[in-house]
Length: 142
Image (cartoon, rainbow, N blue to C red; front, side, top):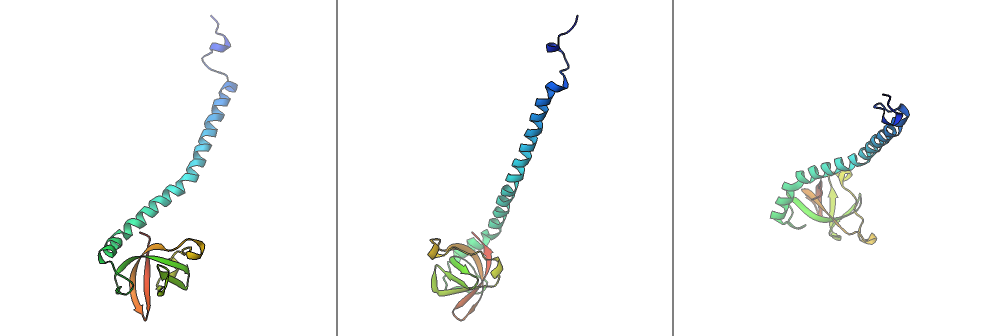
């Protein structure tokens, strides 16, 4: 009994080629997907860790509810800051409440009221008061 080519148990190499190409293309597509998605997943994990690290400071700041006038060295605060440039930061956009940052390079810039952005909440600790200016250390975002 002879078997016809259609019912042969071992297909020819040329008939396996499309399946092999499909598997290779699928693996390449999956690798590209991982390359694009992995940084975003890792960034979300890093952000969650940073937020978790500031949580005790946020809770203490809410409990104390300090204002610009009542803030004391060592105390955490969560305020809305306008950080327009390295030399210009105010609480809630009030120029009468200037801020200096002990760790300026770590503080992100906000968009400011002129661009429609307004202030952003930051977690910080009070380092000291210099005259009418508070010196803060940026800790992150709540």
